[in-house]
Length: 143
Ligand SMILES: [Ca+2]
Image (cartoon, rainbow, N blue to C red):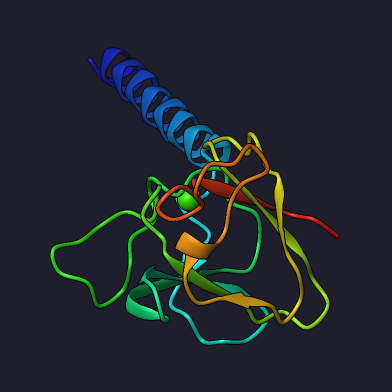
């Protein structure tokens, strides 16, 4: 029966279209997986796994709410940046960042000024006296 077949086809197509729209809505709503990228030493903060700007490295230009989904380049086995960085350079010539002790940009108490660096975070303390080495979890753009 042509009428019945057409009805089923139209209903099926409607379901496919609605399904595609739902998938599209989910993709639009999802936040970017990560804002990190390979260090190119321009207009970014670059972190290193180890002191002295050694070990794997990874950079950010914009804000980032958690380092748990960011991984060092050229480091095997892979390691997330979360609470593992030991040195950094802010290569941005005008922008300051504030680094945070917790994910979700909480306890952001230390400023990384433009064109500043720390070769060994064991020499730096958070304002509460905790060693900054292996303890940065997120950051905000400060200006
Ligand atoms: Ca991230």
